[in-house]
Image (cartoon, rainbow, N blue to C red):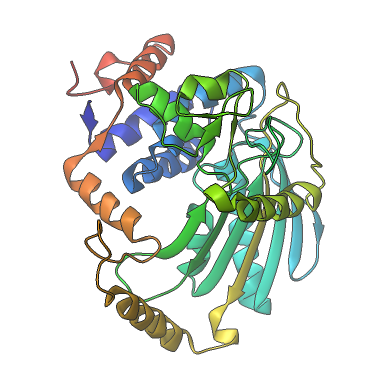
Length: 352
């Protein structure tokens, strides 16, 4: 499996995106999010998506240069139309708007509709956490493609419907939870397919509703399962609410149109910690809470207790030093993109 250091991988993403029509600023924002996902170990939201984004630009499902439009606003709320811009670009600006409103009024909420794939959700609530706020974001694909079966049913009727919450602390790594309400993010199925690996039990069902570990079954009429295993009704209930917040509240609606443009509807919340507790005290308390949890004796099969966000922090530090592993199939896709777009072959360095 090829290893690329993050600056080289960033340059690949930048050049591909700009050649596909993105402006310098758009390409930088999207590429930063992608490489950040790879560094954190969430390869399903990293450069594996470059070919998908290029295809969507060609189809008109992503519109470089799309205007950022605030269509409705109060001092503490806003409704944003992304006009089919890059999700990373639109959601970054929407989060900045939400943070600015919360800075002035303690708490704020922003909804976004008509934007493309936003990438890794954690990037946006973490913006609020760095400003001494709690950040929360939910996301859903509206009335477009779906991946998840409702609990007790079969077929793709729900999105993966992720939710992320990030909080400030004085720990060296950020504290957050970023999770799909499905057993796994849909792009991870493609990642396992690219690696030629079977899926873990409990991730998908085939088209007949039977459990499967074959990634191909997902793409041949199967569906993801809600998170929770034999308690999947809880993940289903959470997914239901995320779709209400991100699909219905945003006005995108619900349903399944596999040919429609990917449309990430989002709800973004931010509130100032110091509206409730002194910020430095809260950050210290979070650190002490983590230390308390880490004092637990490890259960069989575990070396230690980790806090939410710590695995990504450790992976990021390791990959910054050692490089990012890229699946052979993903590297082949990148090579094809580079060739198709007429970019220098040396853009993918150090790989035979």
